[in-house]
Image 1 (tube, rainbow, N blue to C red):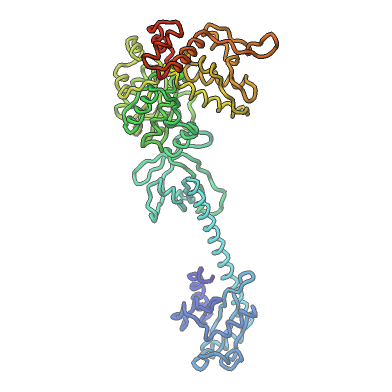
Image 2 (tube, helix red, strand yellow; image 1 turned 30 degrees about the vertical axis):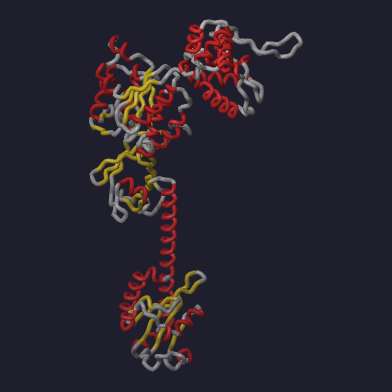
Length: 590
């Protein structure tokens, strides 16, 4: 243990020897010489086990001891080197650390004058030596506390590594006194590099109680998100601490949280040809960096497609930032997209704010309802698409970003261009890869898959037992126009699960009134009731019954040419009418 403070003990030994004019020796509990002056200086680090009976006695008794007659005292009887011993006297005392004796410090005389000096003031020299031993023990305790604090700090830094957070501790002068592995990695510092001082600048609020910081390391500016806190420590080496994430890592966490569990191709549910074709297109364009324009009616899942492109690409581990351009007023939209510095405009956050384009650096930004973007912002967006750089509001500093832009709209952009509401050059920049999400009414074969998924989802959410879906409900779904597409479809299922008894079934009497009303049939409050009070078969729209009759006939006679002729005869309709009905009802396999 004394070896951990050996430089300190050596310095003490030299000072004592100069002050009292007598050589000093310090050994530890293993009888290793830790410090020495005079003839003992060359033997530092060596064992004195064969000649240390006096020191062993002192460590055992835990009391100071004066050897007045070396070579003649009983303790020297077993010493193997007593014949070569030139000592005339020694005074020694144990170094005690709590319950442990960690060593011995001794004054060793080699002349009669030195011996006489000590004998004349023996109590003074003993007290002096006891005080020196206490100082060494105190220094040892301080060293151990520092080592324990360092070990604890190392452990805490490892914990922060596990939780993927960078940690930098600054001293009172603003220089780094401690930095963990992840912080070195994020700041581009080598494992053994002395970090020195770095300038940390607050550049704005980020989210909740987190702030955005900019640091300059080796001439490279890096954006960080985290908290910088002052430390209530008297130790000048621990004045403040910065706990942070890199900006891309933080935005990636946020985008993963907002995406939920399903954001890839598997989240696009359906088996129709149009949907299979759309998924194949997503696979082909995912690896590209080209801009994508997704068109389609409201509720067809355009953001789902954008997230699938991101999840399938090599940017999947980078941020996905979505913003609805139609959901914010024009004056707020610009600051949301590009961010601003402090004092940029009246009412702005005094710390400034980071924009969505900067958050998306390295990943994907999804601009929904792009057709609502005002013309002056279309100009700025065009510049970002061309140059991949922009300035925050109130700043002249260019910010370079590596982003992929995916835009979406349910508007006809060509009409908006003709009306002067949308820039033609921006349209061409956005429409590099056009994708279209098909409306639900054009893919009725997907309704069974979607219905099962939403039915189980809401049964689980509302704590109801899984319910079967009546075939008549599915038939009713397939003839409805679905102006709200999948979003309206999901809402209908949610409504019906709310209305149905625990365990179902999901029957037509539970259909929303608007759904049945659009089919030319009033929505009953419940299934029809017969005169005897028992529930009878539900009333169905004629189109539903007609489709079911055609499907049954084709299943009976077959869907080849001969089977269709027989089916038409059995239904008492012409073969041309049958073909027209098959197309109208999108009867699969016919």
